[in-house]
Length: 292
Image (cartoon, rainbow, N blue to C red; front, side):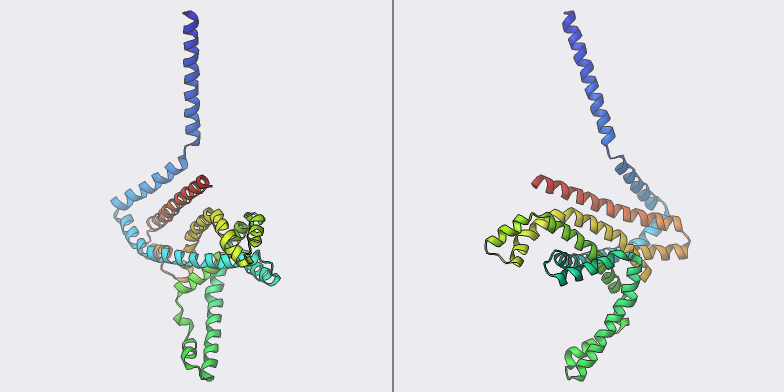
C-alpha cells in the first residue's frame, strides 16, 4: 500500500508539472501583441462613440475611405500585371527582355517612393500627355481626324491627380511584384519546364500551363503582404492633394487644430485595415500549407 501511495503521489506530481509546463508554453506563445492591438482599437471605438470631437473626426475622415480603397485596388491590380510581364522578362532567355526588365526594376527600387510619386505624377505623366498630343496633331495633319482629334485634345489638366496617383503606385509596385513573380517562377523545378517541353509544348505554353500556375500558388502569401504594404503606402498620394483618408485627416486637423483626434483616428483606421488583411493572409498561408 505504501508503495502504491508513493507511486500515485509521484504520478500526481508529474501530472501537475506537465500541466504547468503546458500552461507556461501557452502563455509564452499566446499572441499578447494582438490583444494589445485589439484593446487599442476598442478604446478608440469607445472614444469615437462617446466623444463628440472624436466622432466628428471619424465621420469626416471616413469619407475618404472609398478613394483610399479605390486607389489601392486599382493600382495593385495594374502593378500585378506589370510585375508578371516584367518577371517573365527577368527569367527570359532574351538578352533584350532581361536587360529592359532589370533596368525597370533597378530604377524603381533604387529611388525613394515619395520621389517617384512626385516624378511620375508631375514629370512623366505630363511628358507622356504632351507626346500623345503631338502625335495626335500629326495624325490630324495626315487626315486621320478620328483618333487624331482624341489624342490632340489631351491636356495635362484632363489627367486628374487620382489617375496620376494610380499610375505612380502601379509603376512603383510593379517592380516589387516583378521580383515576387521572378522568385516564384524560379522556385518551380526546372524539370517541370523540361517535362512540358518534352511533351511537345512550346516555351510559352509550358510557362502558361505548367510553370506559372505553380509559381503563382507559391507567391500568393507574398502577394497578399505586398498588397498590405501598398495600402499603407497609398497614404503617400496625399502629397498630390488626392482626397484619401490621409489628406482629409490633414485638412481636418489643419482647420480644427484637433490633432490628437484626427491622427489617432487615422492611425487606428489604417491599423484595423492592415490587421484584418494580415489575418486573411495568414489564413491563406495555412490553407496552402495544408493543401501542399
